[in-house]
Length: 117
Length: 113
Image 1 (cartoon, rainbow over the protein chains, first blue to last red):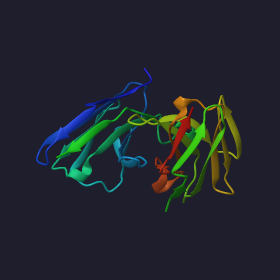
Image 2 (image 1 turned 120 degrees about the vertical axis):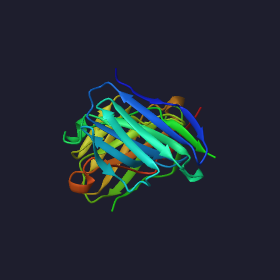
Image 3 (image 1 turned 30 degrees about the horizontal axis):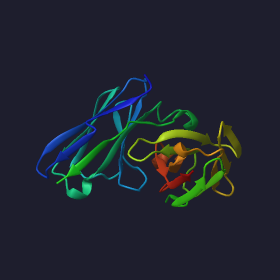
Image 4 (image 1 turned 180 degrees about the vertical axis):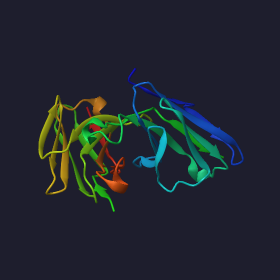
């Protein structure tokens, strides 16, 4: 299995809703990432987990709450979002932060397209 | 800070060769990646350079000059399916940049028949 699976593919939510995005990989990767991508823009890093511990938080607002229940799963909990949070949310995984960067190639999921009304 | 620059758009015809340039100024450097992203899809890995020189992989080649902070992606024998955005990304090497992949804005390549 060489894939990163993200669900749901599409999500529409109101500003008062609580929802979650889910990500799964079975490649034995020990680093997992959340990126946010707006149309015609590059992916922007949000969070990095290394060995199930939060390693990087790029000053993301608290209405986004990541969770890594185990080495294969990564969630992003959403609460009280704003319309400007509408974007494609990409999950990625890699072997790990301590390996040489050439071996630390990111494998991306297909993304969850979020629309906040 | 991190600054990665690449052209916004390029066009070429089927069968031609195109070179997409990327310049970077980053506080740490641990390799440069090129990713391809079709509209509405996930980025997929194309190539990696950490030492100066050319890496060839089929129709795609990537070049790096660390002293110049410069890379290019060369696509030969262009096909319609090569129409996509090409993202240059630099990997951080230590401290606060470790684990970070800094992306350029992407170059949207359109291949015409």
